[in-house]
Length: 201
Ligand code: VGL
Ligand code: ZN
Image (cartoon, rainbow, N blue to C red; front, top):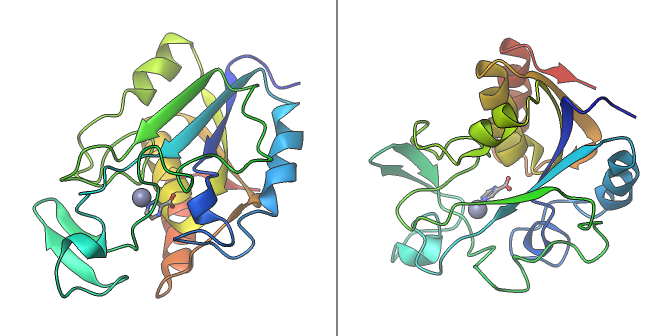
């Protein structure tokens, strides 16, 4: 059992990121039993849930004429336009049916503001608007984090990089993660994580 200052952070294991979902990640579902098994080793477990309103500006459908997976410039920088996914209250936004959610102490929702996306569990994509997770972890005196989930190259990597920059000791458990890999995004994400001292296990 890991000590109480070491939390497991499970990123976005939701139907839309699993095979058959709106933004399916290849093998997104194979990690579910691995994550459930890992949960037994942690006293503190936090789940995140991508949670967008239907008019979210990260959706290609909300930019007439724009193709999914194209890039646009938002006030906070470049933003990939995604297929509509994880709409609040939809089946796609629900956790994978086999994910053990009962052991979670906390479920953090992100991406709920229509005008800004949030890959990271710590900061929205302007890199400054906090989600509140840092305060939660600090008030529980958590210093170490192990990350798992979807997708390695977006929400997992952004969360891992932010956590490391905030001073947490961060490990990404790659066997319990799967990637989207859009135009080399996985290689870039791995490099970004290594650069800030994330342990890739
Ligand atoms: C994610 C793209 C859009 C993720 C969320 O969970 O990695 N990726 N929204
Ligand atoms: Zn999203």
